[in-house]
Length: 308
Image (cartoon, rainbow, N blue to C red; front, side, top):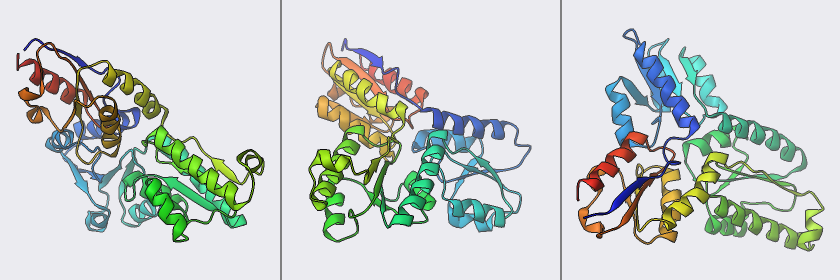
């Protein structure tokens, strides 16, 4: 097989994940025998988690916090946490290293402020995100639970039909930082259209009311990856997308590649790659999620080269 292999230069860890993992490694390298706990998986990638576990990082759940010895060091990952988690950590006497991504921190603050605004006028905060995702749970906490999470058009329609969403007053819309810009735009357009109908106004007239505020909260790195990855998928005969099965960002980006290149294969590691997927003279592209380490992309590329 004489195919060529190229690794997408824009794939791999985002800045927030790099910051969290670098901090974890710095602490572990100077541990002096003390354990370091991560509240939840520091990254949604099994291979990277195993590497960090071998260095001494131990993932725990929120329920585990109360059973940790006082003074234990706990790392809050890039996804962020609700205010209640910080309170609980203090009550348990834990030493917290906060690695919440700066982009997520800014979004959390924006949602706190929006929740206060809409509470005063009986409005609604809507978050476009994956239900149960760590980042989304942290965002909900900023609104003290007074926000509605919508994960897609079907969920939006259901929430409108069952009365979960109240679009009669002021509405502010936010997105989880790693969601698809195209999907977010579709959701926002549908909300705007429904609100203009409820107020019996044209779209142009409705926009002048100020009743709907849409916040641009998708991470710029993530948004840029969507356009760059589209070009990458189109410019290769076959695409091998590398990410953990639990990576929300990975699922979104892999589906983007598949929509543009039918010969897109999702793998968790190099052992998942199969020689029968490739044709002679293929231009193979290897790419991944914001939770995919560079070393894993390189391992997959080497695996493909070994088939020659």
